[in-house]
Image 1 (cartoon, rainbow, N blue to C red):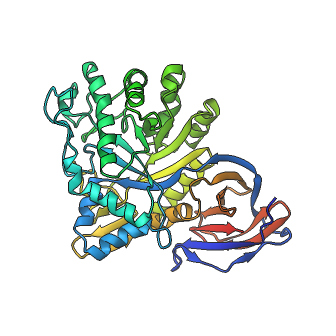
Image 2: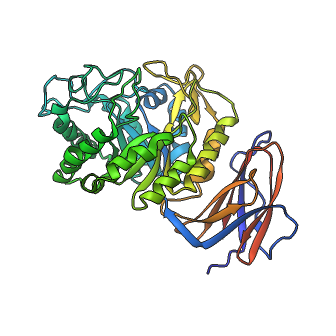
Image 3: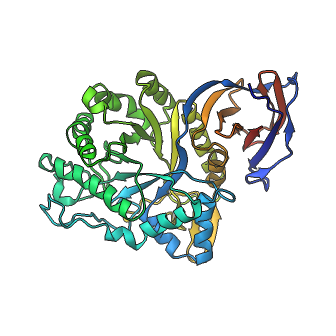
Amino acid sequence: MTTYTQARHVLTARDTDDRLTPQRTLALQEKFKGIAATVSIDPTKRFQFIEGFGGAFTEAGAVTLGKLSPANRERVLRAYFDHTEGHAYSLCRTHIGSCDFSLGNYAYADVPGDVELKHYSIEHDRQALLPMIKDAQKIAGEKFKIFASPWSPPPWMKTNGQMNGGGKLKPEYRDAWARYYVRFIQEYVKEGVPIWGLSVQNEPAATQPWDSCVYTAEEERDFVRDHLGPTLHKAGFADIKVIIWDHNRDLIVERVRVAYDDPVAAKYIWGAGFHWYVHDKFENIQIVHDAWPDKQLLFTEGCQEGGPHIGEWALGERYARSMVNDLNRWTVGWVDWNLVLDETGGPNHVGNFCSAPIIADTRTDKLLFQSSYYYIGHFSRFIRPGAQRILCATNRDDVEATAFANPDGTLAVVVLNRTDVGQQIALNLPGRAASSTIPPHSISTYVLS
């Protein structure tokens, strides 16, 4: 087993200037005695592999970037995708057609009855969204993974005749809708943007005032089994990761059971996506893994609702608490919502304003990095794709932690303190340990080598 001799410490803490700031490197030595708070790590006990961390490319984010100076536009993208100065994002999301964080409703096949998709066009995405993705690719220097999610089929395919307000996919258009996903993949590949995965539908249990479409668990199962899965395979896209649910943790157990218990549907499904709204219910993620260990779990969306929340420290702590708890329950990736929004928490075509880790004041060309930006970085910068979760446990409710073994042999241990009291902790490995202090309302990453 590797002998680890030192721990590089990076800290973000409220009421200080520390923001992903390197601290004194710690020496690992024999176990420390008398330290009440411990983080116990065993690299020999291993669990799931990580696909990556990232955020979502949305039209709102792309339009916001377009209002900034060229220098600040690049600064935002570097903050997320640069592998030296930024978060090194490796797994991102985008929307198929419009979502609430678009300037309005739009679809790629607007002509009613066009089941052959003769008028299919992604020209709308070439205006702002695709240029944003391509600029991010240049900065990343590699093809990070992207999965795509529809918020609604075109109005003519739906029972309510509009993209907003829920409604359902009409049965007679299920085949055309499945081919719609294939065309999206094909068109994006032509643009140099390969698609890694698809979720069947964003938030299929919600009738929203914005772009939405409702599926029962049985309808989602049948669509994947009889249409989307076979259509992807026939088109040569059997490697595309099909993600079901893509909604909140609270109902995930009962929703995925319907599809996973159907062997034909299940063979097409890579795993389940989930969001954090309504209730935390972290234990439901563990339950899904325990019941269907061959299926993957991916956090596909989360943000702070109700406006931009500029300067609020609680944002970062909400992110980190979710990330620690989800990762410790077999989640293989964690994807934030909008990469960047303007000073209102938009634009959003139905006023559903939210926060983002970077808020851009388009009136003054000023970038406002939120606490969530720094907290996410404690995971994405140091837990790399291909990392494997290792055994990690704390002995205190007020110390939360997770740990991973990276492909390069280093260990990344993330420790969260959401309390008003600083803590002295011991990082305990078999036969080795390091002592560290974690301030109140802080997050630390320790890279052991």
